[in-house]
Image (cartoon, rainbow, N blue to C red; front, side, top):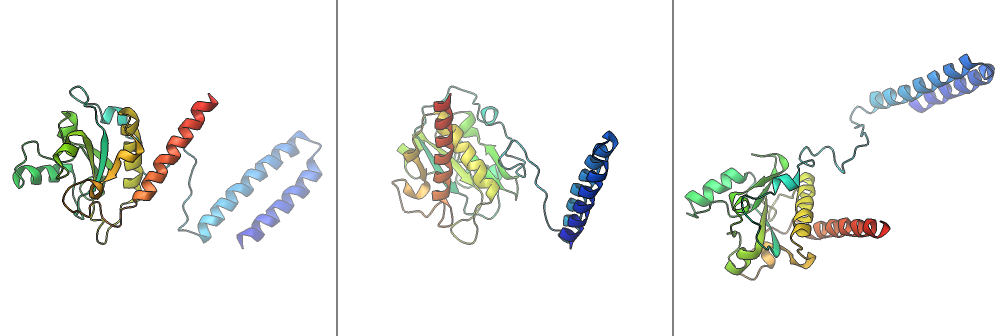
Length: 240
């Protein structure tokens, strides 16, 4: 229906333009009518499709993620000299809800770990922190080894990143979590020259058996996105 309305308006515009094309006033009126047609089309679309979303062009890949604009350089700054990190290990919390503060409390009070939170970073799922929000742990600020695997040697050289959720059972990471994870890994791997082959899932670490970060975690997709970013960056450097 709205297409017919636009068609009628368009024909009227053409006819009107032919009649007045020799005058400046006619040109201005034609342009004004053009804007009315465009606005009418948008309004009619929203009227007949109320669930539709209008996406405006932005400078970010996903402006709907409020944490996409987190300044990683500022977020990842440390209180001491950086350690020579060699690996990045991805985890899930194996819980439906949580955030860095809750996990820190559990690790200190229940596990009796002196430095608390086992991970260096936690990425929220919208439960007790924002969906895609990157939280920084005390171990990262102080550049302390993690406690996120049963392999002590790995913990000394591996950055631990935990996504809130149980990806072995019903849950899957949110799109915002994946976007934030990719951005964080890309930043850390560049800063510490960590090779793509050293970006691991917890279950790939040589230790006791674990399913972490779960069978529903899209590791292949994460690696693909990282490779695409690296490829675009290399192409840009070559062009310069």
